[in-house]
Image 1 (cartoon, rainbow, N blue to C red):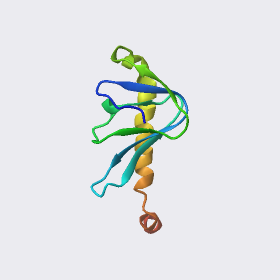
Image 2: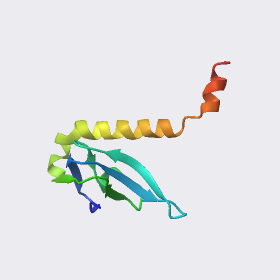
Image 3: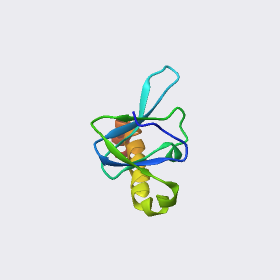
Image 4: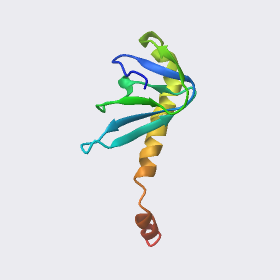
Length: 102
């Protein structure tokens, strides 16, 4: 696990991680999967609890707040990937099949 700390972002230099939380039934819920170049950290999420789990051997570097503006492109990509994941999770095959009739 990478320690989630308020005000700290981590940039992944090697490996893969997933961000996750626990639902009310104490089942792990993946929030996203991230790899080289991606940025993860508690400041990017409103979800609590929030964990960063290493899926492989991982190297990260601390991204201090003073450098967050330089990380804008990876942060935008992070948001886009999260949105795409949500879109995929909410696809309804039955709804898509019926859409061809309209």
